[in-house]
Image (cartoon, rainbow, N blue to C red; front, side, top):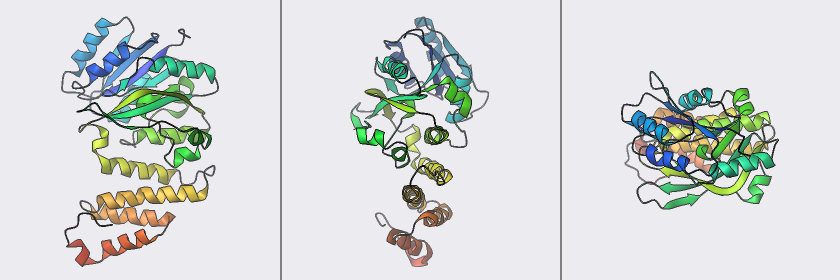
Length: 305
């Protein structure tokens, strides 16, 4: 098993606060045949120095490449992948953590499932300040059986830092789509599943997703907008029941409308229209009235609709 080279592909941007801890979790991996490629998205802090020091402390190959200008996480992840050499590419963000057996279980699962091209573990989401687990993203057997419907309805969740993709998958898909800055992972999972690439779950909780104020999750409107775009783009996926496709596409756009209504009414109205293209409920009617009756827009509202 140790003859399989795993390329750890990590985008980084002003990551000096957390990247040291992330690198330590890589150093502690029981599976040792890895290389690390860090693509720095034009950081202005001490990220480079921390990476270089780590490279001096390990025997594995550590490559540092730097973007001339800031490209965003999806494009930068592709820069890291494009500089990799391994048969498998393990995806990692610069603020998340791995259990020491993470790579070992991924590689073991890839051997047990030779026709699979995306291997992933479960992820525990933890609060950066307290270290406490906020929630677990373990997959039930029924959720796995219902794939890819469960991927579409959101019950089959794959955190980026929990996934390992084959060289074949990366070269076939081109990796992340940088048009989806905040949901590039979801877009890639949908694209891979539609093409026919098989997913495999390790059954282990070996990945820890850090939730902190500076992370991508701190941009909720942008994230849900990108997510709605993913559902919109895949609303014609015939393998998924039409009712499921339309329901979740509608709900995604309705979430954008709700979140945008205080700061960007134009986006809110457009998102409501997109939502109603797929479904129309009493909640849609309530929003339609709310957005179009002037007196409602002049009221200070906190928990309405």
